[in-house]
Length: 434
Image 1: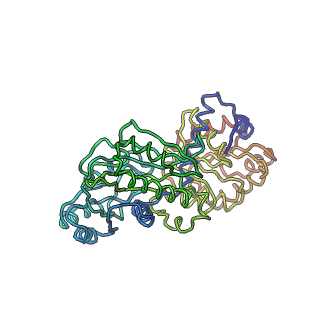
Image 2: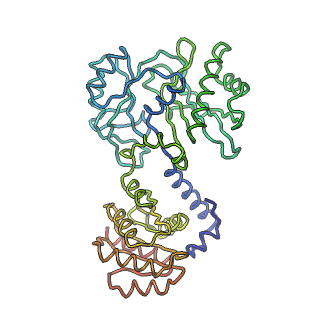
Image 3: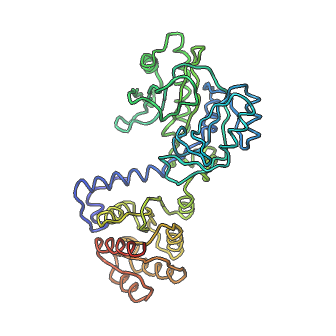
């Protein structure tokens, strides 16, 4: 989506200073990026790698402690238990009960049973989770492979050069696999861009080999991993294939000890098998519910609920609330829908967040007329219990008629036509309700 200063100014009648305007665009891009991707669990990604001939450890998926014990017994003495979560740094997961780390090394089936009991069906948190916590209901039990150096390797798109690229960084530690995650890598690294058509060429392999210090006899193995990985990356419409870590085994060969695949949501119709692997239990449930009703909802950290039409207006609204000392609890874009049913769903999602102390509906009527939007809001408000104050700001086509309808409805709504005053009112009411 390409937005200019004029786009947001026309939509919201709000003039932003250049730095604040850029902040709005950055937030908009960040929010849309959070939504527009499918992330596969490590076990699904490793199975995809395995099916394409990329070397990965033997592994068994466990959903109960007894299954984890049996997996350790089947795979051998030393095994790695990895929590299967889609958010948060694995090495920084904190489980209820006090266990730290989503990657655990065990040396016997009995220890596997004990550790799995402390991980499975337990709530876990991590510093960068957008949720408060997640329930870990699956573990990937992998054989422990003796290895030396380890790297973080990712295949993604270089958006400045408009081409795929391989990013390689050396991990900070070597030795026990359980101490390593894709986030525990040194700041220094290198990227190697290549063409979509040419793919992984001999020159690309040579450049990466030199960076990794790979001997000639090991280069064929690395070439094979890179070539097959790019085939997966291209065939799945991926935006990111992350191998973390890529380890040099004691034999001198490389193995992908863990991996993660991220796929563009726009590829859903081309990749139905992949999208059937989506794990909505790992997502924010309000966001999943909104998607089912063709709404865009992103949970934020404040206490003012927002319902708007248009992503640009949504971010401008969040910014205006911030300028008046408040903070948004969500980003909810209702798009061009103005039916009573849409408003009921939108209000229901926002009101379901107990943090919300006031709601701001900020609508710019373009194709959809403001009087139609007002009728939808009135219809929804009459059928629902509004437990918090509701501010409605309308601007655009038939806004005068729409505002009059809302004022005459006698539903206790706070009606405003000015953007700034509407945001200020929402902040004031949220403060009074807290």
